[in-house]
Image (tube, rainbow, N blue to C red; front, side, top):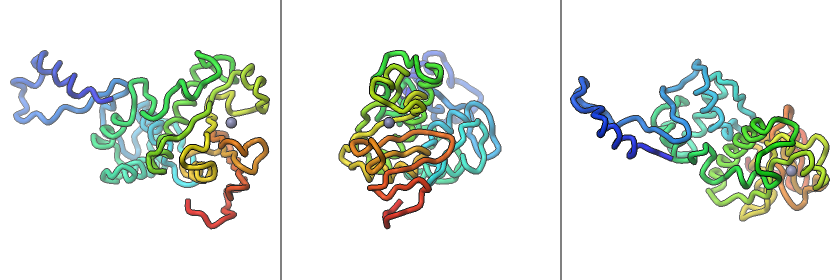
Length: 256
Ligand SMILES: [Zn+2]
């Protein structure tokens, strides 16, 4: 959420910008209650601000891609930023500057989740993200990344609501629903989607473009009634009824 107006008021109250040396003070840089970038970022940059950017554009790695969240602004990050800019009609130069940040600020809530998704809907197991296969903090951080991927997917599909049925599970919650022992739900990055207005197959197909290395859907055992998207170390896609295969090779003439 953009705090520009609030902070501009503070600036006036504090006398900032009044009588400064610079003759024409430009519009103040946007500030945000979640996270504010302090510099323009381009290829070659590194740091936590790069990593924060990578989380926000994690849904734009291209078909079959997964963007590394390593704080290193390399070609993959540039391509993801470019796709993000194209998705929102910004100048697409792969350089994250004020226009890109302003769009991100519009898209994020004060808790850093994208505006159309929340921690609550990604955890209907417990209140503190504990008891999974990773620390609560890691599970929550993983869920945040998945939310940004879903936000990209939602936008690409016409900004219609995506129906989230759940995400994180503790070991106890996972056992209670008969989840696989190594389920990505135990890591916080898996999300189960209802059909919503898009339908299962459209969701499963579209997810291939948004950084989900694990996609399970109709035709895969236990997944005829939802689509499961998650992160894993190597690709595993299987929604045979939708033409989404383990190898990622098209089985039906569908657009990506
Ligand atoms: Zn699942």
